[in-house]
Amino acid sequence: MTLRILASCFVLSLPLMACERSTSDKDLTLIRADEVLALGSRDKGLLGKSKRVVIVDPRPTALYEAGHIKGARSMPMPTMNDVALPELGDVKSVAILIYGTNASDVLGPAASKRLIELGYDSVYTLRGGLDAWTKASMPTATGKDPG
Image 1 (cartoon, one colour):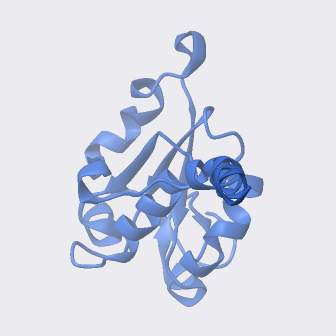
Image 2 (cartoon, helix red, strand yellow):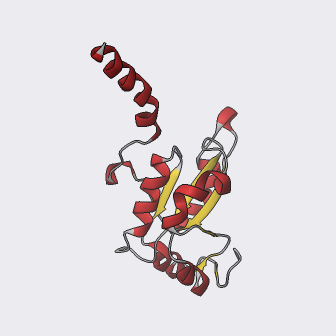
């Protein structure tokens, strides 16, 4: 009887274990600022159609408002679990670019890993973060709304 209960508990817990996967830096796909423009056509979804590209800023709201990549969505890391799926949509139809402030900011890679754990398979981390983006003369914006 006890063995049956243990086996049942194990079988019932399998779906829960499969929901999250462990990630490491090896799972990250780093991308340079000059490669971002080709990202939509580079990452093909079903039937070879380009995926929708979403830029996510996982930094605190105050940093986002002070300056962010034009068109980026603010999604502070502490809220990512709750808002990722409703905000970003279907995991198979979207390519996501994540960035931090600079090359030494661990927030970008950490947010990328979290999205991978949530099931997104087309997650890219901007090498050098917002500083590299700005240095490459790419468009930025300030304020609350995605610019």
